[in-house]
Structure formats: structure tokens, C-alpha cells
Length: 145
Ligand SMILES: CC(C)(COP(=O)(O)OP(=O)(O)OC[C@H]1O[C@@H](n2cnc3c(N)ncnc32)[C@H](O)[C@@H]1OP(=O)(O)O)[C@@H](O)C(=O)NCCC(=O)NCCS
Image (cartoon, rainbow, N blue to C red):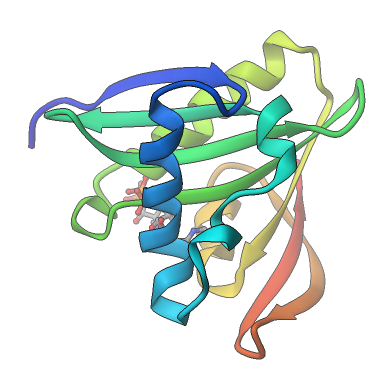
């Protein structure tokens, strides 16, 4: 595997934003027959996005939403299936936490799919308990660091 090229950007006008929506859609929406429109929201405009490219293909993306001057939320974490379990998810967490530190945020929270809870625990996120079930099938857990 060639080395991933990482970068972060703010907002939804960057050329990479289109790639990011497609990756979110492929990983987080299409397998559950959800529409492309559900892979984006208005708060993308103010959020910080971390992405990785390999050979000009976007293979990982994640978002830091600033909730207030102490708190951020990580959302829309997606790694291309072919590249999962190769360290890209860990890279996303590192990039997003570095951005949170620059902003002097003290708390990060996220709504983790049941299948990803153990992944986030490895980075120090603590499971606060069940919050909701998406599309009648994916249980989510509130996690906090
Ligand atoms: C969850 C996800 C972002 C993790 O990214 P990844 O690139 O596969 O993870 P990494 O390779 O960086 O893994 C880092 C560590 O977490 C472990 N890990 C990865 N995915 C895991 C999972 N779903 N459950 C438990 N552990 C996991 C890896 O084995 C690795 O551990 P190690 O360092 O001891 O080997 C990615 O698999 C993904 O996009 N999944 C589908 C979409 C999704 O569920 N997104 C999260 C929604 S809340």
C-alpha cells in the first residue's frame, strides 16, 4: 500500500468535499439504502474535515464539529472498505484530535455505531451508554473523551 497523504480543511467549498461526500455515501449510507443527501448536512460548512488520499483516491475521511468553545463532536468517520484495518481510522482520530487541541477544546464526544465502540475505546473514548437505533438496525452509543 502506498503511503496515505493526509490533510485537513474547513467547510464545504473545498474541491475534496465532493470526494468526501462520495466516500461517506459509499461507506456509511449506501449499504443501508440511504440517499446521497443523507451523507451531508448544513454543519459541514463550519466543520473541520480530515481526509487521506492514496494515489489520488480518497480512502478515509472524518469530521470535527465544534459544538462550543470547550466541546467538539467527531462524526462521519469512514474508511474505504479495501483499506479498513490498515491504520487509517487511527490516523483520522490523530488528525481530528490535533485540530481539537489547536482549538483548545477540552471534550470530544461522538455517537458510535455498535460495531465501532471497541475501535474508539482504543483511543480513550469512554462508552456512556446506548442512545438511539438508526434505521431500525444500527445501535449507537454515546462516547466521551
Ligand atoms: C471504524 C473505522 C473508521 C476504523 O477505521 P480502520 O482504518 O478500519 O481502523 P484502524 O486500522 O486504524 O484500526 C485501529 C485499531 O482499531 C482496531 N479496529 C478497527 N476497526 C475496529 C472495529 N470496528 N472494532 C474493533 N476494533 C477495530 C484495529 O484492529 C486496530 O487495532 P490494533 O492497533 O490493535 O491493530 C472503519 O473500519 C470504518 O470506516 N468502518 C465502517 C464505517 C464505520 O463504522 N464508521 C464509524 C461510524 S461511528
